[in-house]
Image (cartoon, rainbow, N blue to C red; front, side, top):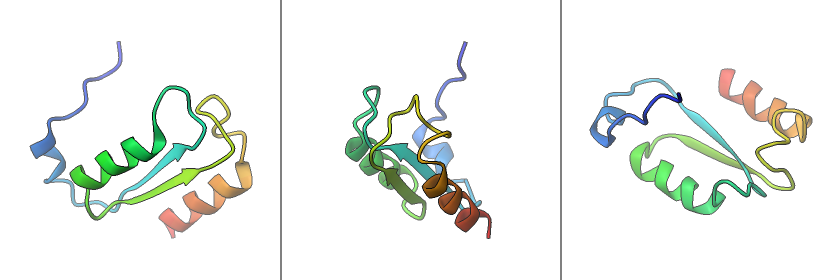
Length: 75
């Protein structure tokens, strides 16, 4: 069983830098809608949509773009 999503007020206590990556061609999520939702809950988060891939393709493709996003987030 997957863990439940934390309640909205719990996200406000998060002090770490956050980068959220979405697959632009996901059939599970509407990337623009979840990007907007993430921005409302985590206004200081960096959100990235990788176009041309589905959630099944990540992290294998587009590996170069994803690597750049992850290295930037860590760096």
